[in-house]
Image (tube, rainbow, N blue to C red):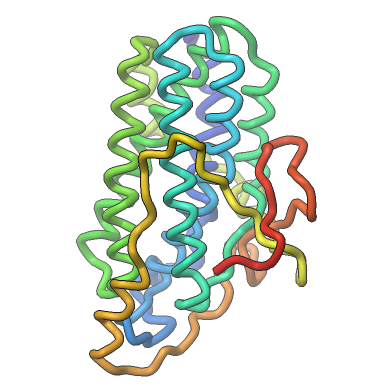
Length: 278
């Protein structure tokens, strides 16, 4: 990838993997006391980030299955669809338990990334796909580790365990394509551009509309966390379950997602549930 192209891709993608920008300067602030442990701003934002990541990486995986010209790219695409459908199921399960509002659409920057790969063809698609996805997964890997090592909430901890395995798998399959430019990728990971918060935050969901579900592929190998078993074991510890409220973006809006309506999204191929899914 040339220098100009690399910088353009960095500006487009790096903030997109975050899902939303930092809500406040105190990510350790406890916003809810739940029966699964205290929920901090960082915990809440992490759940939203995982959901938002799936809302653009899942459709990118579907695009890669159609447009990838090498076996490595098509294999990596299968892993994106498989891994993010399982992560999505876990997010949708724990979010209502913790009082977290999830997005149904990616942020403007994330959607721009999807649009870019939709317009790419041939070898350019393969190269952009591998380098952008390796960069974003490499960046979020540190965030997953931090949440896993600091959260006191058992549901968030379980999601972090699953995300850690999934992100590492996706990093590995991107590298196995043989297309990753490590010099550019590492530069972009450590030198992100500054973009307005409005570009980084998913739009709020439309009230009363069905929640988007990232449907597992027929040959899925990844599985969601057994939240029912985990929650049942933790429930005996007692404690009140106080909702955390909607996930709040940097612009102060409550909620962190949009909605695609009742039919398949023509851009992402995601299918809304017939009724809100928890």
